[in-house]
Amino acid sequence: MAQELILEYDREGDILEASSNVHGATVAKDMGDDVWLKVDEETGAIAGFLILNFSKRRRPLRLPLSLVAHDTIVLSKTS
Image (cartoon, rainbow, N blue to C red; front, top):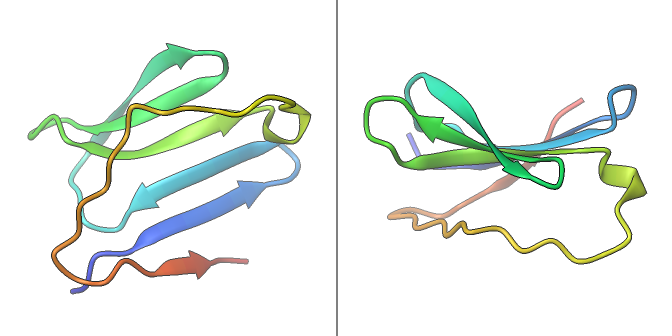
């Protein structure tokens, strides 16, 4: 399976979520400023992130996140 970065926006909750399709169970860690990192419980690798109150942000967001893929990363739009 090729690694994908999946982006989803929940309009009702105003949450942007990005996650890899290649990870195990995750836990969310509060990074402050309405940003949560999704971390793989077993490996400790960053598996994605959540941004709360996404539409209300007015400043750039810098995340301590780098994505390395051995295959092509595909951005997918889900309904």
